[in-house]
Length: 160
Image (cartoon, rainbow, N blue to C red; front, side, top):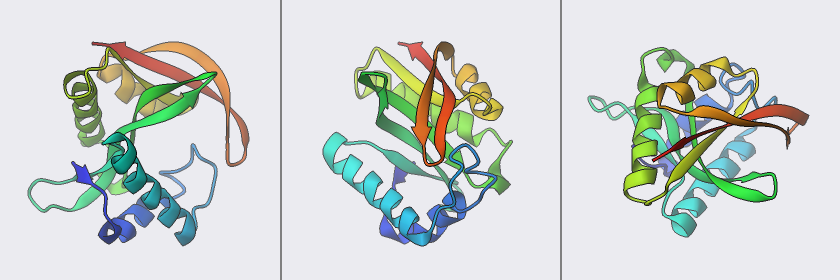
């Protein structure tokens, strides 16, 4: 994984503009939305030293998705969240699990955190499976608002 740069715009657009990949957001991402997303990651790197990173294949350096750590709102606080999105053609190869596990290890090792979270839409069974495969368990259920209204989400977490 590496930091996302402006040169990753087309790969990022392939992810964010695919309704099958982004179904949990229930939002059609325009090119402007993709640019805002990319800029947000660059700002996160500057502010926090981390964000969503480009997931790439070692052999070809092709960007196949993004995964990383972000600070996300949860109720009246914020949590360190592992997030991940892959291009659809790279689903079911274990890449997301490997990236999520690497993010967990980074949070515990480099960031010295005792706990890390994933916020997952209640019907996102693939993400729930990934979270559980890296040792996370459901801690809470809550409603959060995305682009198109209130949605039930689960808070998953794992301790060091």
